[in-house]
Image 1 (cartoon, one colour):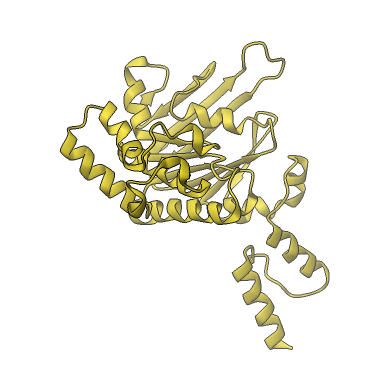
Image 2: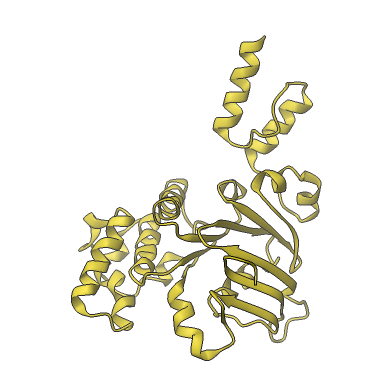
Length: 281
């Protein structure tokens, strides 16, 4: 096992029953405690299948997946693995199980047999962390998409996981909702050291990760820091992916002859580079 790895995936393969194509082929990667990981890929690349391996919603047909040393194929580990690895899915309406926000957040701990006083404390703390305390007694269905996802995250926090996995959790949200969820996730990583795995179709979201894994046709084709991955424009195109918008703009400015650094990958860093170029003229 890789030193300090919280999740270890070794030579994993998987094929859905009745499917002609293999969903995952010989995937190996490790996730360290406290990391923010982004897994990207075209539709059908296998990224959501891999995501479901992380808390034993799917089990590998080949290879192994371990969470803090626990093999996901061992049924005796199942409850503990799912407590440690919390999943947030694409549609927030599918994750809310009661009609009132605070009851929804307390649902998981109650099922774990947590005493009522402790449930109350966990619910209050979780809602505070996602900045939804003011909505504790509100109807879940009346919330915006971003607010619903934050409640879903609060429900996981109340179960005290070590890893938060977002399976395209912002795909159905408007820009404001996406920003609300991403801000919450960044805060949890920064303040709690929570390990975060983001499955995303938005390349801009992956820029905030420590490492990026690129899947194509069920294979891991590239991994590295966001800078390393998104500066490989040719390989990205072969994987049917596009670079983030500001990386493309940066490259166009460089092609036009401006002395812009290849380190500039975000709006702020590109603005700083342009300001530097203008001051030097």
